[in-house]
Structure formats: structure tokens, C-alpha cells
Amino acid sequence: MEVELTPPALHFQDVAATLGRHPIWSGATFALPAGALAALIGPNGSGKTTLLRIVLGTLAPSAGRVEVFGAPPRRGNRWVSLVPQRSELLDELALRARDLVMLGLTGHRWGLGLPSREEHARVEAALAAVDALAFADLPVGWLSGGQQKRLLIAQGLVHEAALLLLDEPFANLDLKGERELVALLTRLNRERGVTVIVDTHYLTTLLPVVTHVVCLLDGRPRLVPLEEVLTSALLTRLYGTPVEAVRVADGSLVIR
Ligand SMILES: Nc1ncnc2c1ncn2[C@@H]1O[C@H](COP(=O)(O)OP(=O)(O)OP(=O)(O)O)[C@@H](O)[C@H]1O
Ligand SMILES: [Mg+2]
Image: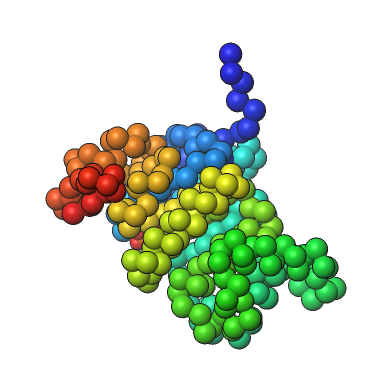
């Protein structure tokens, strides 16, 4: 018999989310294995960002039990890293790109001591991993949305996050940027074993590479089999408008 040694990345047991006094979703029971590359899909306002906040530990569930790698989520957990949906703050930042990444490593001891040689080396490695060396010395505010997103991913990488959460990372990216980001996430997932969860409406580029899909439908997050996601019926129900998923000759996916 095979024994599961690694706890799942996420374990939800009858979890509910409430914001203010509004129930957002409930009845979430699923396990997402460590090493998954998952899409989190659902219409606007269905509670995807809310779910990520619960995983991150910045919002407590209103019911049920959540475990992240076998332990309750807690704010400031360095194993979990979030690339947020909105990051306008970065546009005002005069900090150099590499210093923003360094903060991922030293932020918790802000102002206390200079980074060590080993920490500098880790920042360089993370910048290289996301292909950001070319703009590493520019102020963050000068960078494009896609470049900023890569830095935020690097920030998660320096402290060796095992779970990377990305909230609508493709917004504002052009098609090339979208493809490059999907390639980067696939690489981090396959080569470094980082578990990745991407909350997105951009399915065409992402769905062909995902291993799992968490779908927020009818007020309940659930894990859906990949084949089911690709049926036009589910996508149509999900978005409330006729949608068709078609696999074309080269194996890529067209959603129309
Ligand atoms: N403080 C709050 N009190 C009550 N309701 C809230 C509060 N904050 C957000 N909401 C509502 O909670 C719902 C879920 O929001 P959430 O941001 O999680 O959705 P989402 O699935 O991420 O949407 P999108 O695809 O637009 O990013 C929305 O309907 C939102 O209006
Ligand atoms: Mg959202």
C-alpha cells in the first residue's frame, strides 16, 4: 500500500467564508495535493480572492477547518506567498527592483543589520529564476505590470515559499507576457516542486498546463476533474454566457 507522506498543500473541511455579515461561499471540502499547479476559477465576485486570503491566513474562515501543508494558516507564514490582484502601490515605489526582492528575505527584520553575502546570492538566484536581472537595478515604479509581477514571484522564491498564490496575475499582461508567465509558473512547479494556485479568468493559456482546477460555482468551491472543466457546459454555467472549449490540432486550447 502506498503511504502518503506529504500532507496536501490545502485541506478544506466544510469551510465557509463570510465578509462582514455576507456569506460568500460555504461547504468547501477538498484536498489539493502538494506539487499541484492549480487554476482557481469562478465568476467576478464569487469569492476567489476571499479563498486566497483564507489560505494566506489574513482572513479566518467563518466555519470549518483549513490546513495548509498540514497546519492551520497563519499570517506571516513564510511558506506561502501571494502575488496580489492589485499592486498600484508598486507604481509609486522608488526602491530598486532587487531591493524589493531582498525585502522578501529581510522584511521581518526591517532595518536590523545588512543582508549577508548568502542573502545577496539568494536574491540574485531568484531574480535569475524569473528572468529579471535585466531590470534589477531600476526603480520598481518604472517597471511594467508584467515585470512587477515577476519581482513579486521572485520575492516569494527567496524565502523558498512552497505555495505560491497568484491573484489574477494576467490582468494587464499582453499575450507574450501571459505566455511567459505561464511558462515561468510551469517551470517553478515542475523543476522546484512549488505548489502554484492561480486565480484567473484567463483560461486559454493556463488550462493546458494545470494539474487541478478549483471551481467556485453555486456558492461552493470544489475540485473539478480536468475533463469536466473542458466541457463547454461547465464553462457556460460558470460564466453565464455561451462558452466553448476546443482543442486544436497542435494540442493547444481555444476558448470562445
Ligand atoms: N468587506 C466586505 N463585506 C461584504 N462583502 C464584501 C466585502 N469585501 C468584499 N465583499 C464581497 O465579497 C464577494 C467576493 O469577493 P472576492 O473579491 O473574493 O471575489 P472574486 O471571486 O475574487 O472576484 P473577481 O473575479 O472580481 O476578482 C464580492 O461580491 C464582494 O463584493
Ligand atoms: Mg478577485
